Length: 332
Image 1 (tube, rainbow, N blue to C red):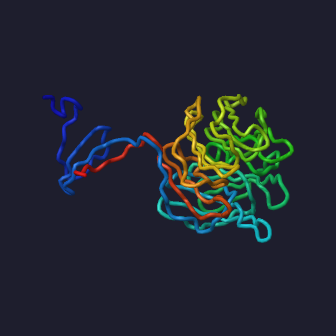
Image 2: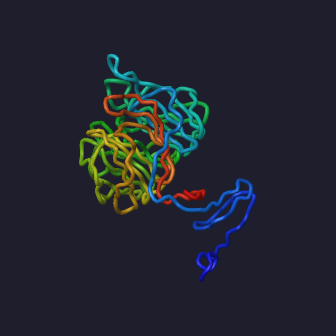
Image 3: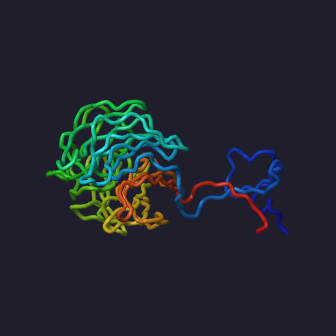
């Protein structure tokens, strides 16, 4: 009879501490906790609650990763009309902390950045008017006004793609919705228009290889690919919508969550060619903020609107399929 080692090629070891880099299928006995453990990968994605925001908002923007995130701007519930916010909150992997406000109070602006110490925010609206051009840079402590957009707009694709020094985005609510702009760390430059102008879309990838999808005012299931020069139509979403949020480290690995109308719980993954449905969020939501440099394996989102409840404080973390995890075996 073949032994486990002959089948798997890995011996069951007795160790005082868990291995630092176990491989899939590896099994070991922890002599400190007296349990048998093994390494596997997640087969499906899942959401888990994390600490709530200090100030619930909707139509806010985000940057960073699942353990180093920043959310900013947005608005509070109408009373009697939406009140724009400059509030900024930082997440360090365990809690949200209020930090210095942005210089501008805006709703529906764009945001991007690789961590809670480096981000960019742009555009949005102060209230009834649309099409602001202001841009601000975050250094981990303060927001500083930098060079403006060429074309003011709000309901910006949520949001741009890339680090705070290299961003591309397209669309948004303005008189020239198809327009795209590229940020090089100093200035915005107009680049080639997308094919179908729309607002409240989702954008992910890098400044030279991006995806934009969903949105309002145009085909809300259409997806376009950016190669650094031109936008090309590619395969559509399964569930068309606007006001969703998402992110992705590359053009071939992105995620879109939530949206409207009506409020959507749908989550879809993009593999560079096709969209596929995966685990839904617990309830239909729209207009939240994602950690824009998160990945299809690990990200967080915060705030937004659920049903008729706007300006939520809820935050959740996503763990995608294929993520390594250590499991403890028992006799149940």
